[in-house]
Image (cartoon, rainbow over all chains, first blue to last red; front, side, top):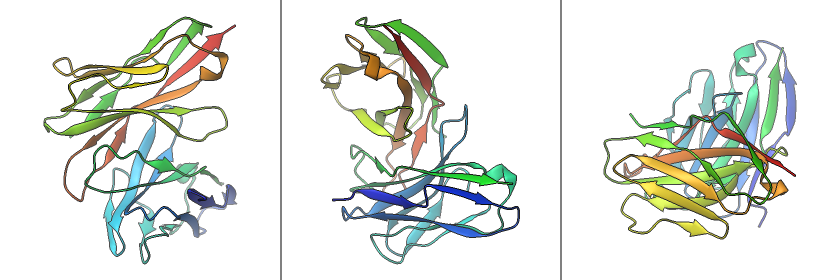
Amino acid sequence: NAGVTQTPKFQVLKTGQSMTLQCAQDMNHEYMSWYRQDPGMGLRLIHYSVGAGITDQGEVPNGYNVSRSTTEDFPLRLLSAAPSQTSVYFCASSYSPSGLSYEQYFGPGTRLTVT
Amino acid sequence: AQKITQTQPGMFVQEKEAVTLDCTYDTSDPSYGLFWYKQPSSGEMIFLIYQGSYDQQNATEGRYSLNFQKARKSANLVISASQLGDSAMYFCAMIISNFGNEKLTFGTGTRLTIIP
């Protein structure tokens, strides 16, 4: 199993550009989520999905869109990039949305810089 | 709303000593789970240990143990016999039961440096 994969690893955008961060998992996990990590702030939840066709907002959803058309994929779209979106983005998945004890498997992260 | 607090931004510990990383949490939900993750300088997030709110025993995983004090709402991570490879950021996180809407909330982390 490849686990959780993210592409690209690094990306530089100009203000106003749009792009999609890709996330895929091959573990048949129902629950997938996106976090951003900023210095001194830990990881903050952007959006999450409890299954194909179902998404919801997390703590910091503004400026980001998601969709979940398949169990495997959960892309994150930046509609109009802003310097405040400079961050490291992590995608994660876990076995069951209603299983508290299931650890989240994290992707390797995408480092995004918006100039 | 749920909240995780890690009050130690950084810690320096001598190799082979035990180290305790503090974590306090706040929730009114009786059913929750607590996690610890390690993030080395390479950036990946590594799951270390899990404790459920109804678990009677403190969780242990090798050199890692979770000192769970429910009344104090604390979930400290204890690393026994620290090693140089333990140098990393450590994050405490909590998940609340809300069928179909569980969300994982992270603390701000503690940077642990092991001194040879």
